[in-house]
Every structure is written in structure tokens, then in C-alpha cells.
Image (cartoon, rainbow, N blue to C red):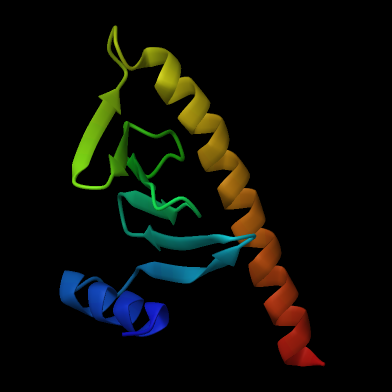
Length: 114
């Protein structure tokens, strides 16, 4: 199933009319973004197969947790003693991805209007 179809199914399944879904490639990475009424989610599949999921539960663009999946194993980091530094790095990555997604959306808009 194509990523865009999966994104639409996910959005419909969540039952939220006011959500925003984007999926595409940034460099060699597959990226899926879901922006809902009160939470945001960003999933990045790296070229080496790792999956990094950034979760912003308040919708304020400040991530609350990051989950890293390697093969069958996942680890979630939050703003506690163990994950504090990892979450700071993940926050910067998250912001960089949001900027790249915005640029991709602008580029598509300009292509569409030509």
C-alpha cells in the first residue's frame, strides 16, 4: 500500500476532520507527519531501517517523547534522567524535519500553480 493511501486511511480511522497528514521522502528517508487537534506525530524511517517516532502530545511543537525502533526492539525516551539529553537532540531533529516538510509543501504548491 502506498504511503499516501496509508496516511489517508490513518487520518480517516482517527476520525478527526481537522487533521493534517503529509508523507513523502526527505533525502533518503521516508517521512510521515500527522498533525491533529491537540497532538502531533512524526515518523521517520532512516535508510538503515531504524524508525524514529517523535511525539508532541500537546500540539505545541515540543516533543514529549521519542521512540527509536531497531529491528524488533524499541526504546522510548522522555524528559527524565535517562532521556533528557536524547530528547534535547530529538527536539532539534524534529524542528529540522518540520522546516524541511514546510519547504517541500511550498515547493509542491509552486509546482502545482505553474
